[in-house]
Amino acid sequence: MFLEPHFSGQRSGWLEVICGSMFSGKTEELIRRIKRARIAGQHVEIFKPAIDTRYGEAEVVSHDSNSLAAIPVTNTKQLLDLPKDVTVIGLDEAQFFDATVVDHVQILASQGRRVIIAGLDMDFRGQPFGPMCSLLAVAEYITKVHAICSHCGNLATHSYRLVQDENTVVLGEKEAYEARCRRCYGMGNMLDLRG
Ligand SMILES: Nc1ncnc2c1ncn2[C@@H]1O[C@H](COP(=O)(O)OP(=O)(O)O)[C@@H](O)[C@H]1O
Ligand SMILES: Cc1cn([C@H]2C[C@H](O)[C@@H](COP(=O)(O)O)O2)c(=O)[nH]c1=O
Ligand SMILES: [Zn+2]
Image 1 (tube, rainbow, N blue to C red):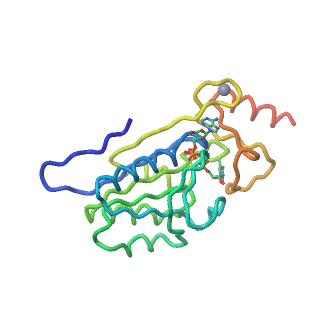
Image 2: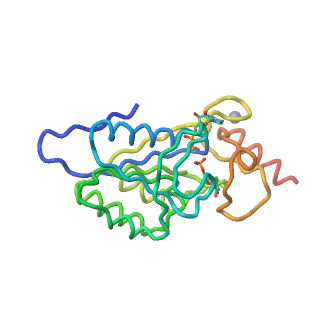
């Protein structure tokens, strides 16, 4: 389990990334860390891409219906308008932000703030999703969480799309995606290719 770092001298900021497939517990882990920061008396703000309207516009919500209020973002420059006393920043569904998010979270960290970022590492094709690769490269701390494969019960790393749609962005839940292990993901794709 992730334990928050301690600093004895002057505290510097840092980036944490929580990544994994759909249903792997990214949002739950983000909510857990945010709640602990609030318990510690820190000022927290949470953001999400405005594009993710699945559960309403101003919330991050887990598949188990845990939720926290969040500010929808259309341009990641908005992240830089934060008051100085906000020392902890959460970002959910980071795969949907554009590449500018990488510079903007680094500015926040260099201002001494803790930035916790949750997002899908891979899209339904098994390819790196949006800015997640770059965020993983610059983060001080990385946590990869795993779902349970819907087919065999092993650990799942992939998000398998059940609906026919070639667009990278297709919002959805269980009706549109399954968590799968590498083996079951590969077998599903082979069957799709055979038609
Ligand atoms: N295949 C699955 N593997 C693991 N958890 C699942 C699965 N399907 C549904 N869940 C539920 O989803 C919850 C995780 O939800 P959430 O934190 O929103 O995940 P993520 O943000 O990674 O999509 C789990 O606690 C569990 O109750
Ligand atoms: C794999 C994949 C997912 N999406 C969408 C589907 C959901 O709306 C979100 C992921 O939500 P979660 O909190 O991680 O469960 O992303 C997509 O648009 N494209 C994809 O390839
Ligand atoms: Zn499997």
